[in-house]
Length: 59
Image 1 (spheres, rainbow, N blue to C red):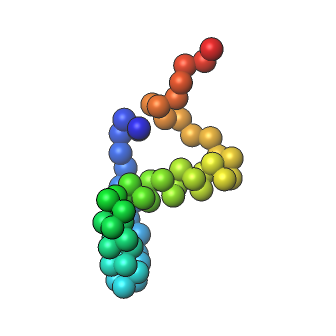
Image 2 (image 1 turned 90 degrees about the vertical axis):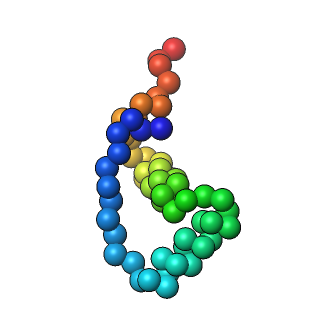
Image 3 (image 1 turned 90 degrees about the horizontal axis):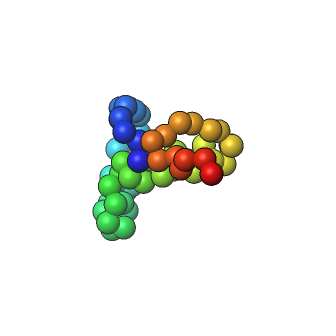
């Protein structure tokens, strides 16, 4: 996991926000956890590399 955090503010329709948060709660996850995973998946899909603390040392 990353060692520092940054805030990302988005505007979203209130009904979608509520539905998203309810679904996250049903899956025992926070909205932030799900959004972080979506961002990681999106970056991976587009083969974007980024530095993180979680990198394994080279062999």
